[in-house]
Amino acid sequence: MYDIRDMWIPAYFKDLFLGAVLRNTSRFESENHFFSNFTNPHLSLVEFWMGYESALELQRYGQLQSNNETSSSVPLLNTTKDLERHAGEIYTFANFYKFQDEFWNACMD
Image 1 (cartoon, rainbow, N blue to C red):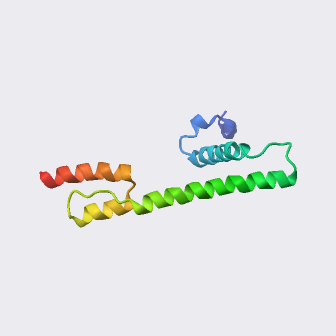
Image 2: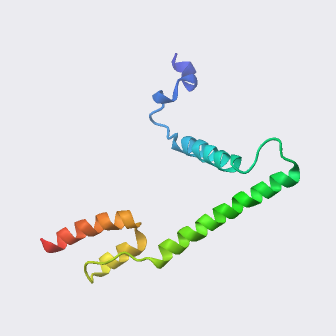
Image 3: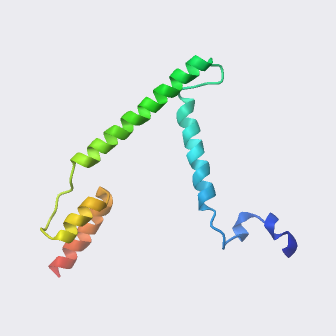
């Protein structure tokens, strides 16, 4: 049984990291679902190309909107401390507000 251990189910491979495999699979499934909204197997090459370009334009537009929202908005600071300002620059808003709450409590003690 030990000689065929490479055929055991992944639950027995506790010492091996399989997260990269799962992450890549879900990424491909997500991409396939996204592009399936713009293409189908019955399209000509020109129609496929136009659908593909439309999908890329939608992704570019979404990325641009996302970048504009995050670059123009700055979280509100409770103190004038450099540590809080730095945290506001590097953390996402959700993580920053968690940090800010803990930081505020630490400053008040």
